[in-house]
Length: 247
Image 1: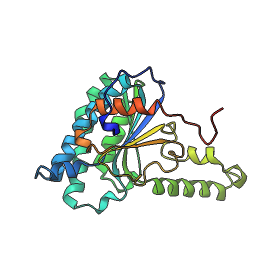
Image 2: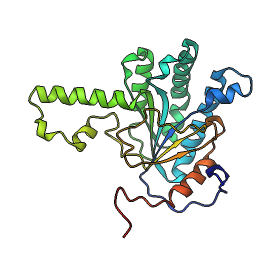
Image 3: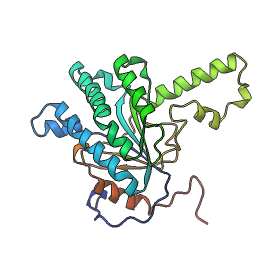
Image 4: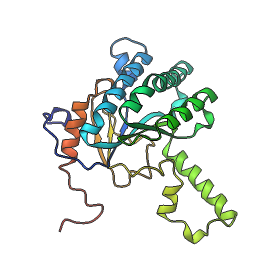
């Protein structure tokens, strides 16, 4: 029996600070299987984002991080890249009221320098609009790569060391974490990748040191809150020892 065949059962009360990250993969494949353009799959994927965001508090998820566009995704066709950026802009405009009504704080991680100024302005706007919300902390990774994030953090720390603001001996795990894009987030307990691929794809490399992974064959446009519930039920049965042994 695979994870996706596990029957849905009522989930036990979850810790209010559960952080789940999702690599939303399979949009293009979903569309291609139906003979449709890839962007149709991405539009369907946006609908699944809405459903998971709405269901997350009830599922016990307090922090939800979604991998929307990687530093490697610029290699895709210009049409697809522009379409993805347009979808993100439309999502922000269409969901602003809903996010505030549902108590969702939206923030973005990744390198914004390559993004269009209009999109950056819109991202800044929605972050300000939702900054008082605390029911769900939604983070979207856009032009994000784990190696790029660590490289940018190292450059910043090196600059501070050079200026005498930080002693080399003060550089430790905690200091590095403070300089990452995710400094405002706890590390994810669970990372889910859809579409059957079993790669981490440069996502949250530092933060996932002790994360649990689930790779599901379900394509993202078909992924439902009930699928997430089944995954969480299995996740909660796992014993997480963080390098120790059971006593």
